[in-house]
Every structure is written in structure tokens, then in C-alpha cells.
Length: 351
View 1 (cartoon, one colour):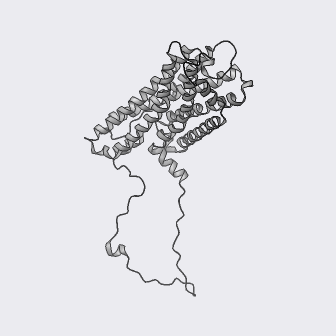
View 2: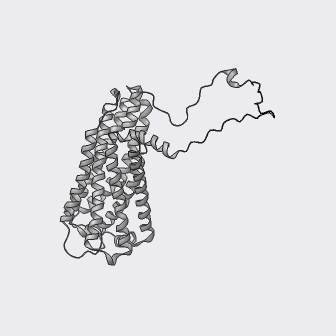
View 3: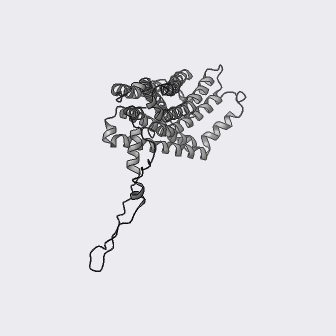
């Protein structure tokens, strides 16, 4: 630890976040909730025959898997740091740190690929008749996400610092220039994702003025893009920018760096919870499949006709009803408004 006067109260803040039982339990809860949500999405994606053939299924699977790794990576580190400090080894800390870096880089790469594909759909939205197929883009981005995460985490494994390990924080394991490159790369991905989603919302809103079929979906798509921006900008870009800013200071304050890193890890765990809600629960096909799985249909109760003593049905004289007098009324729509045109169906499923 360097001077404590450069960032007042930081050392106490770090000790609180590291050793406070409530904070540790909070990290455990957030990590496991994120893992459960992402696991449900993966099961739904591969349970439905329709979703198995969807071009985005593989990429969404990689995204959810990376979010599981990212969310759970902080759980063992929080437990070890809070309760098992005497059993801390360099290899254990390196393994937990590499899992975190893999989840961060792989998630950022996968979300960038999804943002590019959604931008391509939005660009052709007014003339879209059949869904665009992004099979190759999905496969390439999915492979790149996994390889990118493995490459960066593997390179960090080779650049570990010499000497004993006193804490499992990344700053104690790797040189600052390596971490600067890693978080800078991830921050660029986060910024690209946020900008692309802003552009997507603007394109859809602008094209809806000349394409009436887009009026029914523009609000939904704009809210979805806003949710993605909030998740990635608030939970990823802003904390990474703060960490990046602290790291480029000369001389760098170690306490401020570690405190920012802890906050970033907590934000990443929240991102693993919010991402499946924003990306997959708003996906039209996934939402329908989830309703089919979890919404239990009430059994229909048939009318029971009483029997007379002989055993035959009691004849019932027809009674006039409002339907016979006024005609068949229009059945009100139940549930959310459904798109009517092929273009709307395509946009809802692809965006």
C-alpha cells in the first residue's frame, strides 16, 4: 500500500468491502442469482426446436455462459478474501482472477457482435420482409468471444508478478500495464456497444416516420436499447473508465485503484444479473417459450347438466342472451399487443 493521504478513507473502504460479512453475502447472492437466470436462458434456448435453429442461439449461449463465469468469479474470491486469507496461494488467486478476466472479455466481445447484428437489422428495417440470417456472424462472434477471453486470461497468466501474494486483487498479481491494456480493451467494447444501441434507437425512430409498420415496435425496441445502454454503461463503462483514469495517473494511488477494482467487480456481478433480463427475456421467441414453460394453464370446467330421476338429461329451454340480441361481440385482445405484419415479426425477433 502506498500513501493513504492521496485518497482519504480508501484503506478503510477496502477493508470494509473485503471483510464485511454483509458485503460478502451480497456478492454470493448476486452471483448465484445471475448464474440461475443465465442457466434458465441456456436451457430455454436449447429446449425449443424453433430456437435451436435460430441464428442467435449459439451467440446467446456463449453470452450467458460468459455471464455465469463473470458472476461466479467473484464468489470464491470474496469467500477466500474474507474468511480464508491464511490459505490463499498465488495459483488460487491467479485462477480466480483469470476467470474474472475471461468472463469480462468474452462477454464484451459477444455483446459487441450482437450489437453489430442488431444494427444491421435496424439499417434495413423499413424494407425488411423476411428475417435476416446472421448464422456466420453468430458463429464467428461466438468463437471469437471464447478465444478472446482465453487468450487475454492466458497471457495474464504468463505475466504474473514475482514474490508472495498478500491479496487476491488483480493489482497484486499482474503489472499495471497489463491490466491497463485489458481494462482498456474491455472499455472500448463497452463504449462500442453503448454507441451502437443509441444509433439503433435513432434509426428505428427515424425510419418509423416513413414506414408505418415500425410504429408498433419502435417503442419496444427503443426501451430495449435503452436497457442495454444502462446495463453496459452504468455497470461496465463508467466503473472501467474510473479504473482506467486512476491507472493512468502518475504516480498512481494504489488504494484508489483497488477500491475502484472492487466496485467494478460488484458492478460486473450486477451486470450478469441484468443482462439476461435485457437481452433474452425481451427476445420475442425466448419470451414465448418462457411463457409456455412457466405459465400453468387453468383446466377448463365443463358445464354439468343435471339428470332427472330416470337418468336422462333435463330438457332446457333456450334463454335469450346478449350475444343473440346484440350479435357476437368483438373479443378483446388478451396480453401484449401482437405484431401483425411480417416486418414487425421480423424486427421483434431479430432486435
